[in-house]
Image (cartoon, rainbow, N blue to C red; front, side, top):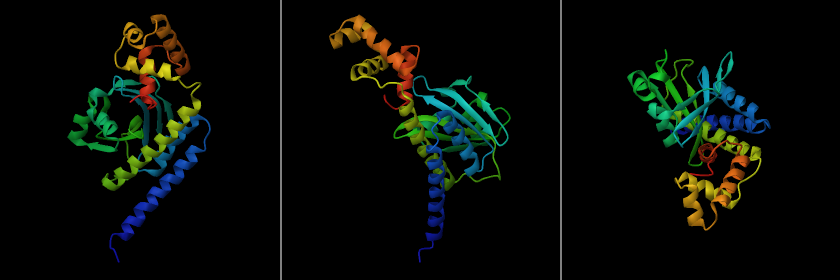
Length: 240
């Protein structure tokens, strides 16, 4: 008999348990309640005491706070907005799309001084859909002095992928209107750095028409300006 079989079977059971929990999250129709359930389930399944949920935009490397949940309290952190270039450890986890744990001197180097506070270690779990990082869960307080070996980190990475699929699906359902092919082309060209004049010349349309496409796209996306629109499309995985 294969001596590794009991270990493999136990690990498989853990993956199945995570899948079952995420299916329960998927059945929640309200988006805000889904986000609450994602962090609550995370604390229930893994040896952690808190969860800071952020969404992420690769345009500008910006992380925006959503929810902070502890074992006893829930806090709105929507006012938090950070450039992750000062926290290479978080950025690395997002770009590689796998969970990472830092401690000691490594934590100080990877997380940046504004993320350290009084903590000595940190866990970053990217929330992903296919090749796109939609956000992440950060943890700085743990239960039971856990060992973050490859097995536990792989389970955390898997959780991030599953809830990423749920979040992406929810975003599509909540979308008040999908962009037309022309509107999407305009947004893509904006992400390349093209001006209104550049787009009008290369697409053979007037600048007024370009501006109208932009205006319609902004309204559909529920954003205020071009930068925010492109950022939102990157976050949703529509642009990459």
